[in-house]
Length: 84
Length: 365
Image (cartoon, rainbow over all chains, first blue to last red; front, side, top):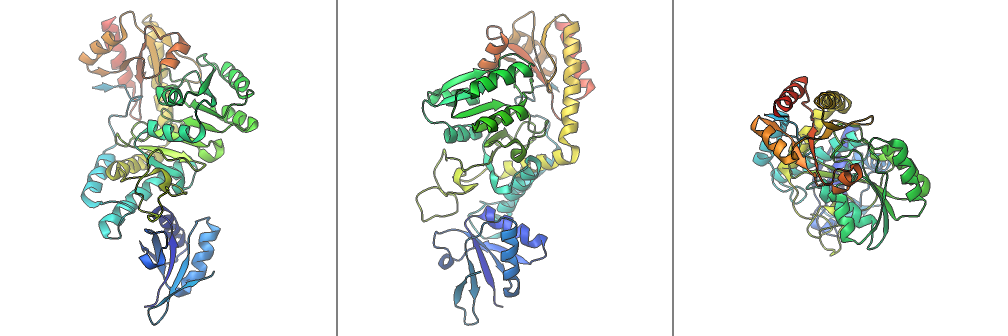
């Protein structure tokens, strides 16, 4: 199943993001950020369904939760960064 | 044992605190380091503590930095706001946790307001000192020796008016008097986890309204490629592995406080402190009491303070005698030579404790 990812610089910020999304019914999974997504090294991300990403980004911004980047996994397994 | 040394640490914690510590030791690995279940369980425990603290103290979870005690938090805050030889204003009732870091920085310290239970004097002297343009102000919410509740809301307003950043030492108030980072407008509020918040020893919180300077550098599980400490909260001041079992216990203490109510606990403590002060006065002792007093009472007995505390201990009553790591407060009150005996109530304050303490005192003097 295709997934999209919102990355955070720390586990605390990712947890705050997770709470904010779940509170509004957006399903997501908190996990370590794959190394190739994280240029600074060692971060956490939220994995979510592609159809939820735009709403999730809006909710995070509304809640003042700082995130780093957004990535989409394509059907062939490759990943591209999204500009939202 | 009649435990009346809650100013040092709370002793009879709610049972759920111990349970939370045990569960964390069984289930939790290192938070913010791995993605496997035991690491994520640890991260969840730690975040729950931040959430509970943020809710109780009016801030966001990431503004809650986890420290090993109040002194640790105060040192971080002081090192952030005060540079060597800076001018600083403090109250006349500060603990060594404030005065020693300032001494180490060779700060030029102005002590403002040394009259016990006198808000007029405290505010007048404090404002006078702020007019001289200090780099920072640092004041305790409640004197750990005398239970004097300082007019911190007015002092905070004065700091904002004069543009002076400030640190609140909530060592004796957190858990007994409402404290709110946002409404107070403090730059930092430091508090222990093991006193009024009912967590285990070795825990503390630093509420940060601005980015602090780290005391320690090291691994944070974030920004690992960079050699500078992260420039965001709370990672900037949390190098190394945090005390997960302690933090889980602290979170349980915070949840207990929310259920019982900080105001209710504070009222219970103050009621027993008032009765204690009245009883000691009836026994003819010099008692320090007045308006704006929390759940702590100090008195000077007719014998040596430590000798009396030892005799009380033999009768099963735990109090603290001496200078209470606050020589400045004793100097302000004129008790630097004798010290005092301090009775400090906690969340379990009860009329029975007061009666038994006063009965022991009546038998000893």
